[in-house]
Length: 343
Image (cartoon, rainbow, N blue to C red; front, top):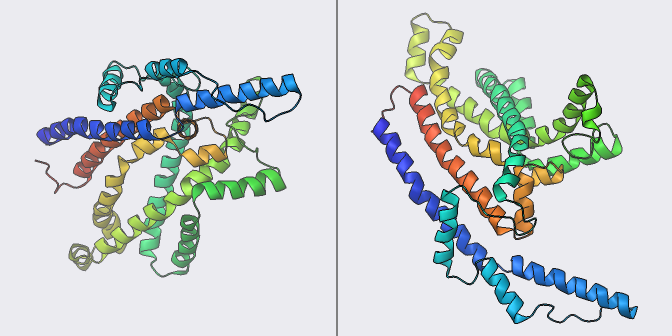
């Protein structure tokens, strides 16, 4: 098994290079990069200055930068080199821990990401705890009470939640509870003056800012996880080994919790590792809707602003976490299922 996981770790290297080189190449050919943004900003400033001087707007939309200035910008951002040469230059810096500087804010990318990790981690851990803490018992209850009133009613609720994207549910909740009823804030993680509040007021303020985004996060995850648990447990309950256990005198409850439940957790374990990347990277749209300054909002803004160093920095972290999460999933499966022997 150790040899298997060592091979999986070695496979991370070519997979990482494949992912990053593909995205890096795309960023080189997508229009609207940092040079185009600087030209647009300079043109806007030029237009504003002329409008102020002449008393009318809209005049003068020529090239605000000379060819020499544009060439210097190309050299500064590394666009004067071939794609592969630029990529390996970027990769050599990444290997030393340097993710570059933001072309939008001119701050080190790692510092920008590091500031936002605790916020995304806060929502990610809460989401995972709630999803696993609710969906596994709910899936068991639905499997045991299949076709009962509780099973049908809970299916209606979770399928309704699955049909609504989390960010759409977030917008609806903001309109209903933050605008119409006005019992929750419109966004952000804490209120202004948070650090001047008492401990209980801080806890209440954090709760009010957390509840709606957290509901948006967990809404879509409930259905997949609950039905996965329910269907797998029902398959095991109809298996011969469970019927044999009951025929030998074991109660139905004992057969469920002593035999069928452990085998039903195997598919759940295969998803566990993938949550590692989701926990840290957050959700682009949900954090945008609730104005939560986490990794998701940073990624969204960097894509919109064509801030390629930040885009690549987030890609490095998320891709590494995703691949390590897959290895963790294999390890979880091996721990839950004694039949699995990785070679």
